[in-house]
Image 1 (cartoon, rainbow, N blue to C red):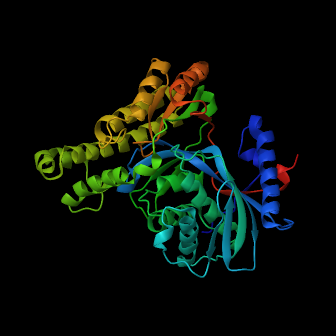
Image 2 (cartoon, helix red, strand yellow):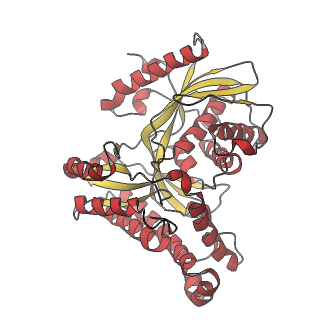
Image 3 (cartoon, rainbow, N blue to C red):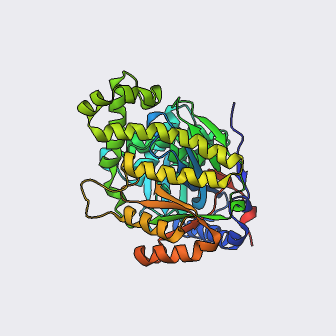
Length: 423
């Protein structure tokens, strides 16, 4: 069944206190588009794709596990017009233009780790699956902080997929398909071995639990809650690590988990259970080392925690939710071991950040490593009454603007009505 097109008014994407700023941001992007492309903009359309936060399921998606994620109110927006020429052209604010021929969609090794690779990869993914693509030009503006664990790359990929869906396929391509194509572009064209969670959360929107037991047909379940009613702010703290130097560490987690799975002649850890690990503990330790075994144990316990998190939200038991967040952080630190690089033990910004967050929160709220880990960010759920002090304590160490206070966005990748951005 074809997806129903999601055309949103701007008031559906942002809270009331941000509407005036967002409308001006969109109008400024329209003017920048007209100036850069020397166009009158008669046929422009506007699209938005959000960043995401991982709430539970740290490093489970690539092994067929479960995650809880949510889209946030930081996003990448695009002012777009279709063209008659066979080129997809994207000019992002502050960056050089990305341009590809939609007739030349093979992998280009020299493009890897560039936005052009993502543009070419998403285009190729759409064409390979039999969807229509065409020429377009776009001007994009993003406030998804790079290196923040909010997945600016997924927002960019999903944005391209959303543009293709709406410009050339009547907006009827399922958001899950858009996410899968986006992951394909990141894995094969960009060269980053990401799981599917980032793209799925950005494309689908809101709080979503995702079960990746069948990677080709993941089970998506919306978790409808009024997060603001819980009296806590969602904070993402940038600890100023180097997010460009973690691919090897990231791949080691995925590969070690899969080595354990292959010992049991299955494709991923979801096909076995923790009891299999316990029964074969000494053999696994001898063959793969203790770290791989610990990471496998984390996987099974983290999968259970995702269910606990979802159930806690649905019954409005926020303390149980916070307890599970803290448990996730504890497991990530001790068993998954993705808080600092074993190759650079002198730099442990995430550990410092977690210590300060714990001090600032006292026995309230919760904090954990966010996303891939190693060099990036921590996540904290902070009671409103502690927010000012919490932010001050973290920014003393990591600098002004390092603590981002976010809102949960209910809508994923979508088209935004032109009428709604007017003054």
